[in-house]
Image (cartoon, rainbow, N blue to C red):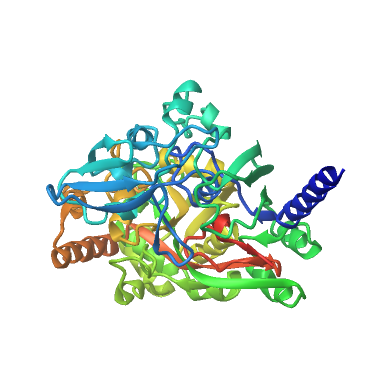
Length: 526
């Protein structure tokens, strides 16, 4: 009898402890992950959801510093400057119990280099990935690559066996509308396990009790319920009513209101992201305008005039309620290559812009469609609406077409837009990342987000050389020279550097991540 009572008492205590440690995080933001396939889309909110379940070799912590994930050590080889050696974490299992080994790393990197992968630019310098043994991987690059680790923080590792068994070896063709098993299913090594997935409705994840880092990180959240809520007023209402605990993208117009409510907190930080407009300047003629047989955007004077028409200070004060910093280049201040001088080069000059339009032969202006997302960036559609009025002052009549990011982004990557909004974060903290995706001419494995049609062979060669230039002074000089071309050619119209505002109840303890990629394993629950 005593034994039975003891067992019952122990069971009750264990049950009480489990309940005490059971913390659900109800999390919302404006948009959902585009796909769960780890290599199909290089997009911030998509990476953020995947970071809870998949892991790369290296991550960035809440301060932006490197933190070991599936790799515990990494360094250039002492025998070959073209090789990086990664020591892998031992004893790690995937969610289905399969052991993690070097074979999975080799498989995942090769998969991420496929044509449909949106991650291939990040590893374009890699020529081979080889397993030395179960827990050692060598990554061979085309010449020494001093910043290779910075390119790997969003390169997720898949289980080779699971991927093969579920016929998802090939990366999802996202732009083509393909759906695969990996689109809505996950088998990662990460701290949370996918419980259910309803795209654009709700994603539920539960704590991985077999996670290798369960004793190294707070891991205080036992369940994550992620709900995309596109409407700003509805998101705020959900936070105010207690329906959600954590709102990742607080509408700027509601900051003061929410900050004055007991039990709620707003945390703010500059984000590693810049917002800008892109223009198709490479085509002889474009479809989205009313000019027959010519492309007004091909004239740098028109592009510069359009930039001069944008009143960035007005956007900051009226649209963003002070929550942005006007930008003059398409790199955030976090990034190697950014300079205060270039970032101050954008200025508003309506009369000067009109004169430049006339000089280019467009004194009477023209009309054009602006493609804009309405669920990706802070006040994205409102920024576009403000730009419509500003460009109208110099005779550019803009027809705004705003749509969800899932429909907007393929317009850029498929070359089906002539004038568009885009935002760009730089997880490597280096200008090479910007150049590879946004400046280099579009090829099969590089320049995939360059919707401008700009293609400069000499500049492309200089961009490619950055990956193997180990002379810091020379490399930085090349970066500055590339930026000078980008600025002089007015390839893009920079708008502003985005500021992050996270809203949360007092029970959530986390600081704002400059990457806007909260990793729930770091969360503490009060």
